[in-house]
Length: 82
Image: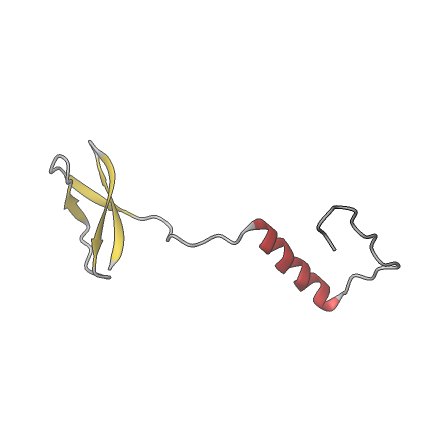
């Protein structure tokens, strides 16, 4: 089953579920019964969290040109951190 979006000129957008490939070009509005046309939107894809995207980008950049450091980073003074 897939979710398809429709837009009623009077009541706005609503969604209906159909088996893939069986959605019609129009459907009656569940509120007023008026003919509502199917609308197309991008699929619901999950976004990568920004911190994870930054880490992935950094790993790709360092694969061919590793970042070189000249000294060991200073230890954190925050309690509970090692």
